[in-house]
Image 1: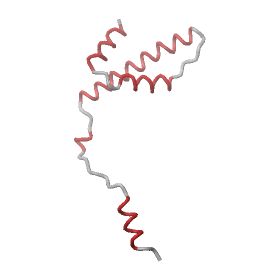
Image 2 (image 1 turned 30 degrees about the vertical axis):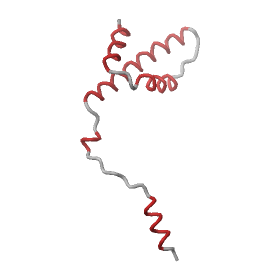
Image 3 (image 1 turned 120 degrees about the horizontal axis):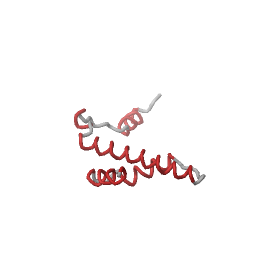
Image 4 (image 1 turned 135 degrees about the horizontal axis):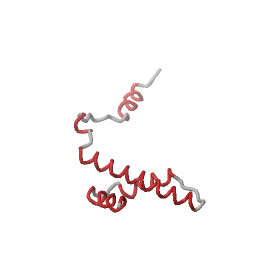
Length: 90
């Protein structure tokens, strides 16, 4: 026989998920552009670093580069990222 109090406690301890309307969960256009620029810069810088590593007969760790790049630049303003991109392609 199951204890009635144990059932109530188990139900109460479950995390209640708060409903968030779909449009509030969708990223804004500005956020999408920001992430797109970060990803392009991450990929292009990784390609250059990987090529330099190959030239110097060294290993290049893409996973480490990807995670560190995202950590380093996730909070960088879009305008600054675009400036990096302009300098990077020049």
